Image: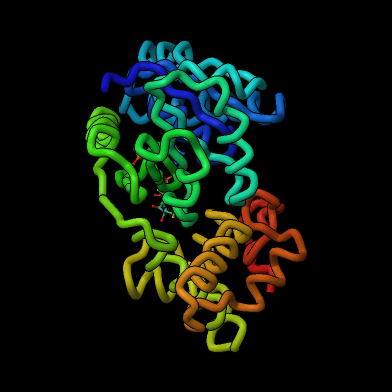
Length: 291
Ligand code: CAA
């Protein structure tokens, strides 16, 4: 199937990155959010990130202008109905995602492919509540989307071959690489990454190391580009906790229990970079550990 128009639901950190890479690859993008301010912020972020690419000689000024011109925004979910492909990139909460798919249902064109950028929720279950489980897939991008090469493709139990082949071709056109994952909790990347981050939080909780020594150890001792606590702040501690809960509930193994310290930070509203505080405090000139 030929994909030309892409509707993206949610203009947060993932949604704006997804809009960026699709528009840059030549797709017409319609970006939806419930907040007008959120949409404005998303377009400003895309502008800034495209400018970074211009200043590093990765794209030209003309390409940047053409990319921005291919992005339209709307506060009305129903406007996305006629798009060839819809990517839901809202908050990682199943009831919110389900409401979005329900809200779209009456407006969808028959051929529209539905996808979710969920990092952990069952694709089969999300699909089963739509009118087109065979045209539904997990389409999981990594943060920051314009930089990270990987896209996870997750088929639900009913997903047909045409839908999978179409998305595989889309990933190729984006210049990214696809990895196929079966539909089990948190798929591949987060099945491995989140227990590592959770273990880093236990390492802090039990006093084995402090924030700096834990991050330095993994950066300099294992060549990770970011330490696990810094990365948790970058992803969002609420998202990390939500994914650990999906692993714990879905696999029923105590090795996936979220660290109580992670829950405490989330309860405090210290969600990482997006709220300026998490394992680090970002309010000053340089990030400093909060404990
Ligand atoms: N848009 C466009 N370009 C960007 C960008 C963005 N949002 N962010 C960074 N860049 C570019 C920079 O311009 C720079 O370009 P050049 O190589 O041409 O110089 C390059 O990326 C590197 O950036 P910086 O020099 O600013 O900083 P850095 O070297 O410290 O790299 C990083 C930043 C790429 C984020 C790196 O720290 C990194 O790879 N961190 C780990 C990220 C990671 O693990 N992501 C996965 C998270 S898990 C996930 O997303 C799944 C989930 O469901 C939770």
